[in-house]
Image (cartoon, rainbow, N blue to C red; front, side, top):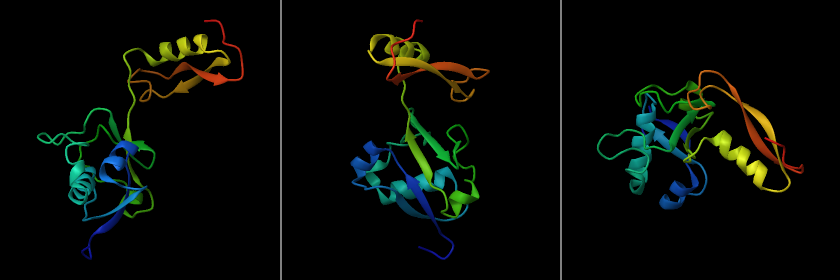
Amino acid sequence: MSATSRQIRVQIPYHLRNLAHIDGEVTLAVAPPVSTAAVLDALEARYPMLAGTIRDHDTLKRRPFLRFFACEEDLSLQPLETPLPEAVAEGREPFVILGAIAGGVDSADAISDLALKLPGLQANPIRLSPAAASSRESPREVPFPVRGSAPSAR
């Protein structure tokens, strides 16, 4: 590691840790400016088997169903060259690569249906931010199944 490199903490999803034979969090030496691209370059250099799993081989764009977070902020749609927050660059906070979950139906409908079908679940509303609500303009309530109560009527 050179004198100018920074120690960056990186958390990756289980399936990628399993592929690379990694236990827990990874610490990488990254030269400033510390950006998503620089962290991914260092990660792929240290674990070559991850090349192409996080970013496309040709375009170097983020793969679908993976999200990037730092300091509780979703960085997935920002350019990869954007500098990461100072807390990440200083190693106080991790850079998180998170596997996203998606389905073929609206999640609110799927959760409501699940609450009606499974005994002992009740649909309790939770509020999603506009970003979390998949680019909806305002927060909305989504029924969230909770064990211990009878299913609620729709």
